[in-house]
Length: 592
Image (cartoon, rainbow, N blue to C red):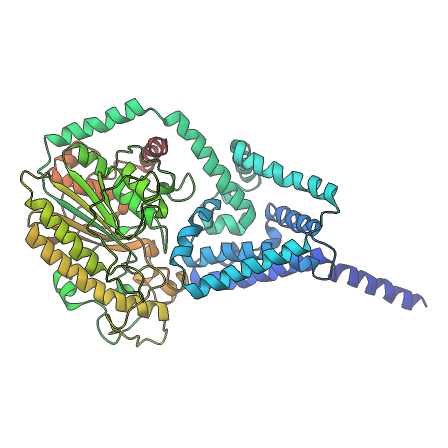
């Protein structure tokens, strides 16, 4: 009898423990995190101990369990109650991990601002599947909600409200408390990468921390805002340039996901993935520029190349998303002040990535978008645009580089034919090659096939796009040099294409998996018709490179951090602290 009673107690304890919804909840998320760990290990060089050890995340577990408990309160009792409550938390983790696997960075709360733009580029099939899953769950949740326990619902919400208030209204309390916790518990655990932060402290907690840090940075902008002093400092450079510029025209081209397939050391192809015209023009004369991003967030790369400071992402989201249109004194604004005509063209909508306000704040006097896109209310742009989507393949969904280049060359030809024309700063944003890498095989049939064992379908599509894109680049440089033989032409890639995620680059040994390899992008610099090669630079070095060329080296002799000559690296006098100060001051005046 005693044995039977003891067995009953053990069985009851077993049932109570292993059938407890919270135990099963934690067990599921633990196993899920271990599965993600396996994927991350294949895609990164992180040590074995540095990924998602959920049970060690002392700051994450209380948040995760609280959210699960509160969702259980909201839902009517049923056999599926725990499952319905856990679903949004699982989807949140899944979205977080997809962002990391594809883009090698942690998600921020401000990434939600990019959802409309993401919808714009998502293939219909995936969009329908994702929308169906979200709508289906929301309908299920609506039918499952219970309002009978209204007191528990109200009081249970208080911790969540308190967390939101602290993060958004008193961010210094959250940030200081967290940094004090790190300093006292484990000084070596101070943040050094997104992956290390998340592995140690968890997804939800770090999401709160990133948001608090963003709010804190925005509060700091108020102390840095001094429009009179900022304008005066910029005008000193503008006035200096007026007496120094050689009035050469500048043609700057940002190319979407313009990867060099030959840099995948473990990939082999049926023939050279580079067009012969391009190879002949640039072989041995191509450089590298470090992008601030991998796989997405084009406007952060654009921000660096136009504004000359790193995209620290201190304020959350892409910097252009915060621009109000106020003069930020980036390169286009400085050149306009020195007498240049600053014009830009791209084939996205004016509202995409806050493009219109961002480019206006950067200093462009003219912006050209396809005439098929109606301008939002309150926008004031040049109406006589030279861009049109007529002829754009429906199977590709975006204008081919070669077509955009041809239209732009005609614009340049007309601009330089005008009597007493000002020098031209001509900036293009080419978006062909964006996800989902559509290829119209009637116009551009596949010419390259993978011959290596480790096959990647996405990369094969991109490689075939690159073959045609390199042909278009070679033609553009050749023809533009005829129109403007004395001009300076720079083409650079915003970032590497995400492909199937960072694991593709690791498996196929992009740049032999060297340091910063996934941020290394090709840059082409053509000075008076001759390709030039510099040592590796950053995207934020491009404005200084241009100003040095336009002043025949005087800018580098007078102002810190400029290039002296081809083959020489960037002057390191402007350290990270100074660059961060410039970034914060620029943003303080760009957002107001």
